[in-house]
Image (cartoon, protein in one colour):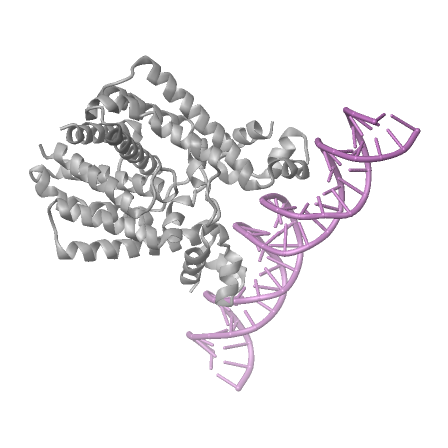
Length: 184
Length: 184
DNA sequence: TCATACAATTAGACAGTGTTCAATAACAAT
DNA sequence: ATTGTTATTGAACACTGTCTAATTGTATGA
């Protein structure tokens, strides 16, 4: 209950409007109860973000089920990410705005979800790098992170471009040129 | 005074430890005064972040003065960015963690600073794309954003890698392969 | 020198926030 | 019915951003 209520708040008003008390009010409980369950503000957000990761993952897996290799698959997956980020902007932003206090790292179960998301790109990349799995992994990391960077700076108006089509143009050029180099 | 005091707080304890009241206390003034000058928490952070952008810009310009074209220049600039992000982690993180409330955009003077930073890559890229300035701009945006993405996910432990040398490896491969494609 | 006008600064309030914890309520098993 | 366990509460604490009336400071003109 708490997670889905919190998700709704973030989704409609953004992470900055999120508060444990609001969640408690929305589900008809007290803050005390919420704290007994989640322990901290931090942890509650983490669980909400986890559902966002799950949703993204489901979308990617669905896309992958239609087509599982070739450059166009990579582009489609990139497009998936961009679309998700655009249409679930506040939830997506919460994944990165949420700054955990220094010297604390993400819990294992959460990092696993991230890793799963990243590994998705490896399969369609494999045939493009002579089935070298090490190369595929590195390429997957590079491409994912690059797409994310373009998406982040693009959607937060830090690139001198407008609209998701421009973002798509940049990621497409990135994928085309990078893969051309890496599979040469 | 306020800006440099705030910078110190963010630098040593991170954005989450930052508060207007702490800044006021540190400089021997009251919150009221701070609010008369900066108007909002938001705006104060923006000005602190601006000095971070300035520092980054100065570093890049210095690097550029030594060598102004060729792929190795791009790599050196990327390396600059990564090093800055690592050694000024909290300040750098504040640039992106700071989420402005929805439906408000960054002020012009701030966006100009960002644009200036991005344009730095264009000059050394120009000879690599047949002096096509449009291509150079797009390549600059793509490379910058990609480097940023790799840096962000790498330094926040969202890539399955450790240490800045690995980040450097990814960015180098990105630059090599992307430029190979774009200048072919 | 004094009075006036304007700017800077303050104290204090308001409505929130995250967090903790003793006390209560609900419920299961004996 | 009594115990032990778990869920839930309410109130408190120390903060936070934000606003405004009142105060202090500081120049300028007579």
